Length: 531
Image (cartoon, rainbow, N blue to C red):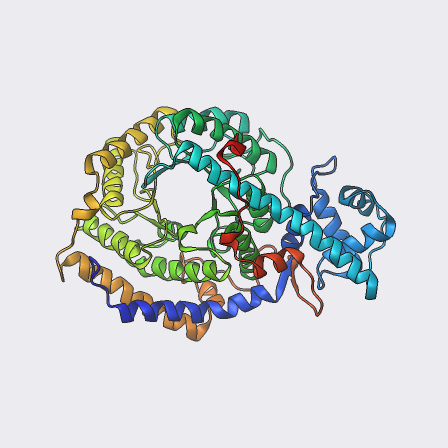
């Protein structure tokens, strides 16, 4: 029996409805591709770099293929056919020539198609092998340095300059952070290309690039060895380049990625079709790389009322669970998000927060839940803010949350200073240490306020899922069901990058990801290889 004594039949019904609601979207993702999916497979084949204006060669190459033969059959056959036919040294040479208009692409047939497909598959296998090797490195580092116990303390670094981020991230780890998230520069999710190299000019965050990933991973490995505990690295695989950023994260051994089925749609106005197609591929990469995804249900509560909209969080989590598992993610990789965002002036606000948090914990007992701190009702009163953050930390410990993002008492005033971060870390450390295993002792009264509220939210979630099954998920998003904002299926940014797959479509990366168990893919290694 669970603490909330949830009706197992109601829980099963909710999951069955989520599966029904997700089915048409999954089918759409399985029968379409996007420019970013095609670029991602070229990145796995080894194509890197950019022109003098910063536009990556993968963009040049995919655009050239699309302009001449379309993307309905994928880029693999035209690209590797041209590589064989024209005797270019590598994909970089081919891309540079294509950017000058010096390459003629075609859809090969017969033996030429077989040869191109074979070369494409070999290149994809090498790329996936690199991801497997990086996953094995993580396992080795965990054995070498030790894995901190949960809840993990999650902290954000956001200077805009990767060389400033690094010492701040290391200092945060020394102060107790278990997970460091390097927030992205404002607007990067709307770029239809991934910037190249180390960057120092981000606004309110640092650009997500492969080199920035590499630099931060190396820095956190150094501090992990120093501290004797593994410090995880997080970034953001959302936006128009979700598949590519997920791929780069796998290649550079990131541990978590923000990867949400609706965040980009609702809060960045990215086309829903594009987002769901890109999401499926990115989550398949994450599954293979052993990366934990973080979802963004907490964002709904910054625009909608946290009490009235509580059931939309549960519905989104159930959908994210279904989408994630279909893409190959294990329960231990489903970092489903929720937040402490109820107005503290409401009577029994803390009891409501406990009901919501405990409901999520019991619905997803094996998922590493990510609990977000109060932001919407933080004011200029730093003393009240610090107290509210302590209540948030207490709720997280009492309900057994897995990942706790630290709250800042100056959230409602300015970008927090380093001293604010130190006080916030002290707050969560104190509550975590003082409470210990309090979650074992927290048992709500049967049929009491907390139990009744949790059952009410679950019932409302089932009702909403039934409506979504009748009207479709895309229609629900268009109607503003999640986060209030309306996003029609054919609106937003990036729809022009969506392509329906034709007969004979080839994506050798997908062939590998869909034919092998992602959780049995890591290459055996020794702890010493992580050095």
